[in-house]
Length: 406
Image: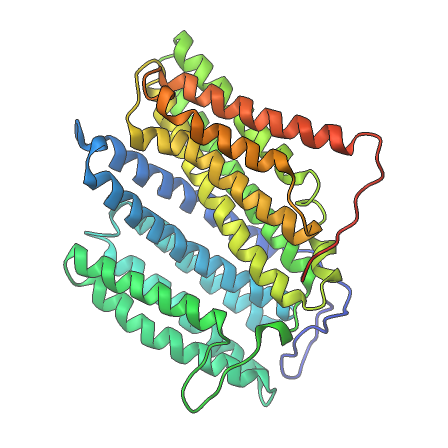
């Protein structure tokens, strides 16, 4: 994607040689290392705030609110990643979009812990600014290009949902959750169906031009950001002490689990996602599907990180159901997302994914009666089994080429 000094912005040709992520894009990703730690901290606080509360309905609602914030952060990151994969990221309008998203994401991360009380308006305004300014800047930069209508429709949708975001921040918590959830749902459906606006039409996602390998690389990089956040959470939790045997084991198992998560992701679908996107008849379609897949895996990694912190702090205690849901549910969600990624890249799913998921589900009830560190060990062993099966299948065989079913 060579830099262009003048003229209106143009989409990158679908067949253009892909460019690597720019330093500005990587700098943007660093903000999400911080933001994801705030998500984990909020969830941990909610699970441990009051004695006995971890057994109640408050944990479920608290988890739902934290997920809502994570989805909002993901929406900003994904919108920015798609933009830099459709247009030359070295152009000034694109850099303006990325820098604006960077600042807004940082503000959102700061606001996460109290987003449903003191800092709700801060979170909402930052989100709306990030989402509205992107299509507005692009609609100006595109000039008479036909894609300008798409950006205008996006700006209209985000302006409408922006009213819900800002209004919700000024209401009671329950009303805030309802309005913010409705806003996210409208935005998701609008993106799924080509940003339809009465009088302005809609577009077909499969016809969008993107630099497919660049977009795939951005998803891989965000996965590494989320994986790095699990390492940070484990390190922070263990460094607070004490350093007794149970805590040492919990920390060691947390590190082993993160290593297994990385190994499973890169073997081999995660490594050649870009190749699969380029082979697909409609790269934007597999790009959209991969977005949902990586979101599911990132949610799984966030849950896994929360489980690390809970068990490192309480390694030898019997853990309640919501805690176990983080310890086992996090790896389970990751495996479900990874199975979908395998289908997107190869058009099939290895049986080891479903067997591992079944083992994690079946082990949940007996683990309620055992120390928390045992649950972490079960998760690590199951993931290690999947990694070993993957390695055995690939050993001595030629690298499997991408065969996307799209």
